[in-house]
Length: 281
Image 1 (cartoon, rainbow, N blue to C red):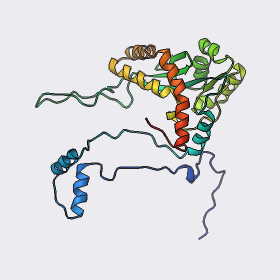
Image 2 (cartoon, rainbow, N blue to C red):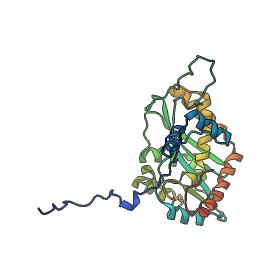
Image 3 (spheres, rainbow, N blue to C red):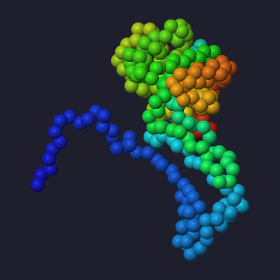
Image 4 (cartoon, rainbow, N blue to C red):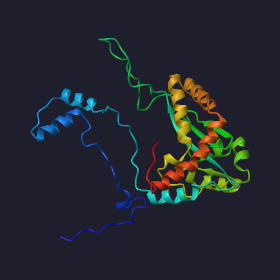
């Protein structure tokens, strides 16, 4: 029987097989139970407590494996970008932007000291918390700016232009001579109305920002500091969450912002040394 032919145009969004490949590294023996099972295959019978005692005796400690996103092989793009930006460009001021969703979940410490027989307090978390706010931040030399979207607002091209790019304070700063704005490949950044507004306002963009490169954006470190402040504030309602975000943003000094901007060039140099591979401090 002859094979049926595929009808219609091929999907534009279908990725090639080589673009879907990724490398995942997992520990061979992540737990004492796995070590006991591996030793049993070699005829060595032992208990988990013995394995744990021996591991502690030789200096091993147990650590929680952090969650991370899958990084596809974008090394050539990252390497080319880092090579260009590893040295500061004269008469150029870089401004970095990013978005983050803040939620009112309990993101505090996972552990708690309790008396014998007592149970630790539960961490109240919801996949879709009722109190969550989207924030947009831009930082540059001696400059920081934050926009918080209400819970009913969606981040699309219209709101991105009206509340972020069209902000008077931001436009006055970014339209200076030598200013270059960085933005990632989010849909609202690549929309036709956004591109038209950027051309109309004569905003210079940083070209060829590599995808899946949070390790290059200084905003990620600022977000981390702000998230720690918000977590300590333990907000529950939307008003408390917004107040915690504003207080956390106010705690970022301009000296700290300037250090983050200068560290961008150092990160680019490290990416070059790693041949485009992800860098983690």
